[in-house]
Amino acid sequence: MAVNPDPKPGRWILPLVILGMIAFTYFFVRSLPEASPDTTLAASPGTTGAGGEPGATTTTVAGEPGATVDDAVAAYLTELDRINGELVALDSELTAVNAGFDAEPREIEYSDAEPRFEAVATSAQALSDQVAALTPPAGLEVNQEALTAAIGLAARAAGEALAGLQSEDPGDLRRAAVAAFTGASGDFDVEVANARSAAGLTPDA
Image 1 (cartoon, rainbow, N blue to C red):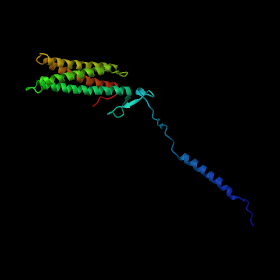
Image 2 (cartoon, helix red, strand yellow; image 1 turned 90 degrees about the vertical axis):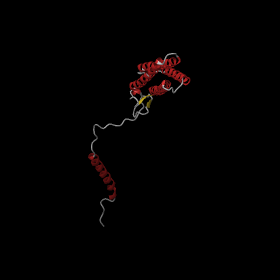
Image 3 (cartoon, rainbow, N blue to C red; image 1 turned 45 degrees about the vertical axis):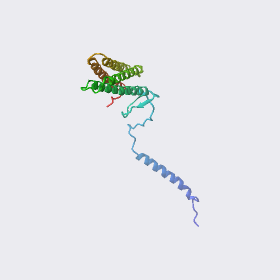
Image 4 (cartoon, rainbow, N blue to C red; image 1 turned 60 degrees about the vertical axis):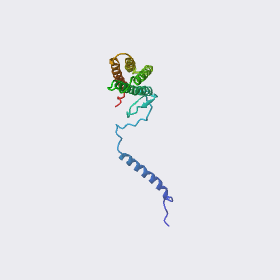
């Protein structure tokens, strides 16, 4: 009977398998394309505030995709938008009442026009006081001064319109004051847009 020179031939199988896997891995890795030197890892998202300050809170501005400002700036601009909307409504009311009072034949009698003029004057002064009480964020101090001046003129014009209505004047003072109110209201709207631009946002469409 022939003698097997290696009584355990199976013990060579495992080393051969391992050697084959190493060789396969070596050639497989060498066949892979090299990474581009321009490749960069994506940075993990972080929280940054206005000016990129870490930890500051930001707010996305409605109607302006991708636009973010500091929360204090967003709150300030939101308040200006509210006041501006109310001022526009007061201008519409004052203009309509004034036109109705001047219509031929008269569409709004004095007994109705006076309390409505008075309501506009009172509301305009309240809005003026609210703007004056606002604390502008850093960088918007000059805008705050312009806004305060514009709405202050509107409040004074509304008061003069009421005084003109109540006076013996034939209507010239009243009409001039109503026109001044409309002009000051428009100026305030422009200054709100300027404040938004100064904050790094585009004016509302």
